[in-house]
Structures are given as C-alpha cells and as structure tokens.
Image 1 (cartoon, rainbow, N blue to C red):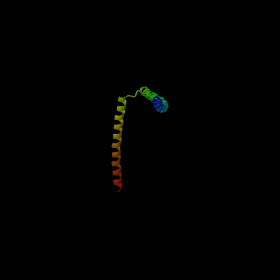
Image 2 (cartoon, rainbow, N blue to C red):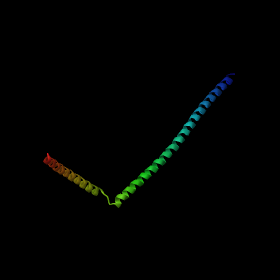
Image 3 (cartoon, helix red, strand yellow):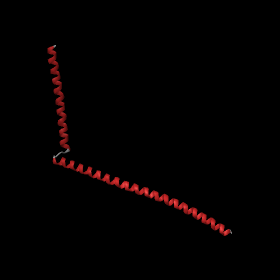
Image 4 (cartoon, rainbow, N blue to C red):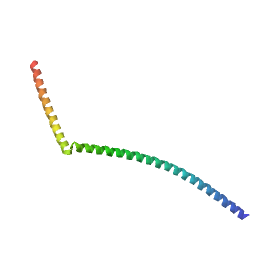
Length: 110
C-alpha cells in the first residue's frame, strides 16, 4: 500500500507541476502575442518616421539646390545684413532730422 500512496503523491505532484507549466506557457503565449503586436506597431511607426525623414531630407535638398541656383552663400548673407543695418541706421537718422525740422516748424507757429 505504501507504493500506491507514493505513486499517487507523485502523480498529484506531476499534475500540479503540469498545471503550473501550462499556466506559465499560457502567460508566455499572451506575452508573445503582446510583443508581436508591439513589434508590428513599432515597425509601422518606424516606416512612418522613415517616410517623414525622407520627405524632410528631400525638402532640405530642394532648398540647398535653390540656394545654389540663386548663388546664395554666407558671405552674401552677411553683406546683405550689413547693408540692411546701414540702411536702418540711415532711416533712423533721417527720422531724427525730420522730427527736429517738424519741431522747429511748429515752434514757428506758436
């Protein structure tokens, strides 16, 4: 009878281990399913990001070609900035002169 009880105990232990293994397997299968879905989502996002990046690269290249076409460079930009600054200063000076002349003309009417 001792062997029978021992066999039953081993059987129960084996069934319990089998149940635990089955539960672990189901959990791993669910995890695998979730990870596959995330991988597909990540692949989709990567494709979209790559497409956006390619579009941006194309836009930058078109802009670069426009700069080359119009012979635009840093030196010209700096030259234009200096000229603009000079013109703004001239406008300020003229505004001061006109303001002074306007003030004098109104003083004459007082």
